[in-house]
Image (cartoon, rainbow, N blue to C red):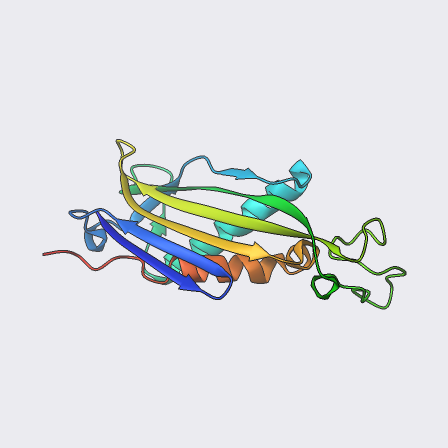
Length: 180
């Protein structure tokens, strides 16, 4: 196994590649079941899943891979979710500025108005792990992307941008160079 851990501003990702699997001769893939665990409504989770799958498909197609229903060379799936953390501290961490002109109340980091004191805020530590497996479900390539969202409501409003960033960074070094 080859392991790469990269740290960037407010996000981390790592890649694990199986030595011996050469993607240059394996271009056909199919999706297995994904697991996305958030505190969003199930309909929102479904939309999030569709956007993630679409972005990954577009990325893989651009790299010469083809999604198929029958007899794929490998499978792809992901596990994703986040944990929320409500914290208290100095006022400079809180936001008393409305998110838009339509907002009547400050957000204080939650998007719910002044329900929390100005020195209380919320952040979400999100993570998604993409797995590529062979027929026997052995992992042949894996990438993990983690990011802390200090304004979860803004991340939801800009979800397409968030998805593009996580897919771009996760698949930046895919496929791995073939080992001779």
